[in-house]
Image (cartoon, rainbow, N blue to C red; front, top):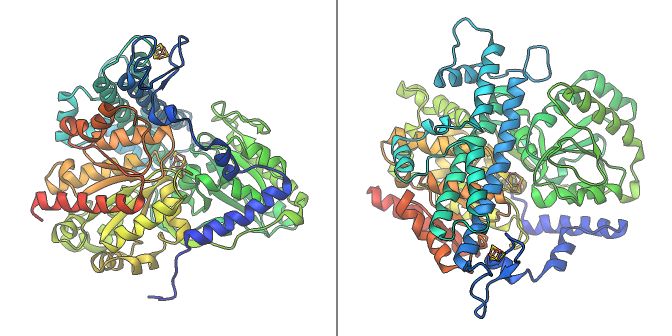
Length: 631
Ligand code: BF8
Ligand code: SF4
């Protein structure tokens, strides 16, 4: 083991950001650091969740002198409605991404742009859902399964099919508590209806619906996104790539893919690997084409295609400020509108591809299942032509980057276990060896570290420092979204990072040949984590609420994160939040989301905006679960 291995520190990343901010100043464009200053202090009513603009008698704000809105809604009703609307917004967003993926399966064909890549997974799902498979063409099966998925979103009756994958105990709890999710569209509409002026004012029922709309996302829309993408583009398996701004290459045509739905970037990769396209890039003096990723589209590409990861959410402006990006191609979600004006200050061409995300200063090339290849090819050709337009005086690429392992889908994790231990036990496709490690205390437990960056806390610091402390305490980490990317940028997805682990976890990493932080994918791939915890609970013979496993979103910012937090809690996993969930103006709401949900689903939130104490609470929480199990 090399003792020379060091992590990139948050201070080093901040120095890179500061240097790139100098470029921003030189070209005369604002970046998020400037805008944070302009927006601080935030509106106190908004922060506490007690500003209501749900009807035009308002906006109403709650103060000691004005404890009710004009209609009589109090702080609890107002904070509760705002909270449910956040969950519904997030659930709708993940789920609509999943729906688009399902349509790609409906439109797939052997000679079209979208193909069935993991036929085994498709057939397994077809059997699970009672779709005939015997003697049928794979695309006939794909079209039936795709249509079933799409129709799940709006079906008038019954509950979501994917929920059958949860443990019996969870399914029973959800049914008893009235939380089993109906169609995604129905749960989002119910949430909007409940929060319209003049409806639910009792916060308990707003929190219950937040759990239900969350479940509709996690065990519905997001799961559709993950499973459809695996069928279309391949189920990820572990492999090595690289992360951080140093992956941008001055000698290459750099094309950045950003957003969440992999439909566009899959095509970009396919065409960028075409020898004819590479030849064109060489003809303009470049060494080749370097496609790199941002945010969850980056994660999707990293999981399946070794695509390098340029950065996470708060790095999107930094990437453009390097001055070497020929094209930025976005799909949906988490795209700063400011990437338009920033790209205008450089030679960078900026493309939007979805009617869901129309952004000023972009060239809009709308992607469909039937023009995807032409769009990808146009973007790449224009990027190659654009190579000559760089302004040397604006170029600066920070040199930090790290080897990063990604691709730990449930199948990827089981594959490692099968290779290392299961084959000797004569039982494949099981988590039992992992469970033995937890029972014996070699591993104390696991944390699902997920979510965004948020300038309310020091960006990436919470992710990285909390991960380091957890690893030192023999707690293994599974990560998705911008949290996984923070780990990658720091070096924690490098297998050599096991030197930061306690003895038990270090031994597991050595035997299983894994990094201590397992990159499980994008934010919709938290559905993989839900399958993982339920399957571990089944293999162990206990309930999900008993597992020494927690969720943590230390730097979350988006409505999608609120939806995620709700389905993770409803799946029986305590969730630790490092950012306040904007309901502090209602003590009833605070009680409901931290303690109240425990009575219904056996889990709740722990909120602490100090990462140093939040991580201690996680360790205490995991040890308490172990003590309750007598292990
Ligand atoms: O869905 S972690 S900032 S990129 S919302 Fe967005 Fe948050 Fe990043 Fe992915 Ni998830
Ligand atoms: Fe005010 Fe009630 Fe209207 Fe909200 S719904 S803006 S509290 S009157």
